[in-house]
Length: 183
Image (cartoon, rainbow, N blue to C red; front, side, top):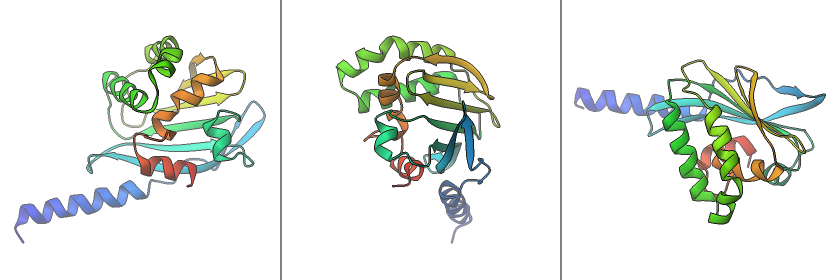
C-alpha cells in the first residue's frame, strides 16, 4: 500500500471512531431552576469525516418523551463543547441553512426577528469553549456562553422551530439527532 493511502486510511479510521464515541465528560444531569434534567444522549459532530467540530449533549426530565422535547412541552438543554475555532459567520450560515431546510416560509417568518436576536448574541467559538441553549416553557430559550446567560428568546414556538437545526426531520446530522434523542 502506498504511504499516502495508509495515512489517509488511518486518518479516516481515527476520525470515524471519534465521531461515534465522544469523550464522556458531560455530566449525567444538570439542574435548571430546581428541575433536574438527565442526559439523554451525547455525540461528537465531525464535519466531512475529518473536522471534529463539537461535542453535544441533550438534557431533559427523566419522564420527558421525545415528543415532549420536539413540541417544546418540557424544559430541556442542548449543551456544546467546541473542539476547534468556528467563526460566527459559519455558525450563522449553517444555522440559517438548517432552518430553511426544516421550516416552511411562514414558520421562518414567524421567528425571523427572534432568530436575528439570537444571531446577534452568538460569537466565534474556540477550542474548549462551551455554550448551551436551554428551553423553559413559558420563559423561552436562553443562550449561555461559558455558563453565563447572554440572551433569552421568548416563545415556546421559537424553541419548537429553532431546535430543528439539530432535532428536526432534516437536521444537521441524522446521527447527531438519533444519539441525542436516543432513537
